Length: 116
Image 1 (tube, rainbow, N blue to C red):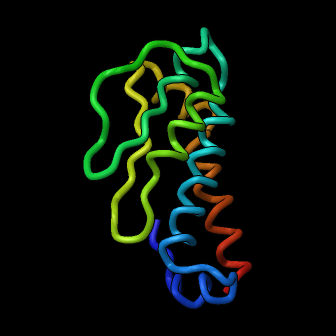
Image 2 (spheres, one colour):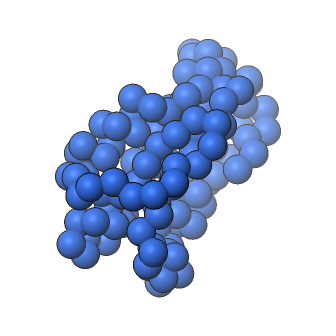
């Protein structure tokens, strides 16, 4: 997702570009995690946040709140690529059905367009 005029939007929100970008990432990633259906909890709890390169492998089952807290701690600001990765083998099937990533990207893009 590319945000045009991010500097101007950040200034109008009385924040730095770094703070604005980090807030957008956290909002997007939180929405994805919250919208992930609960199977055994494995898929919802396997969202992993990394900077620089995507996560490999899976993690033990953890709660939604632990997953969100971990994501908030690890999300970087402007200039750093932050990945939200889920390596559960069937997550792609549920993304095609539920669109938890797609609908949250659309939500964020809509919200940003409103701020321009």
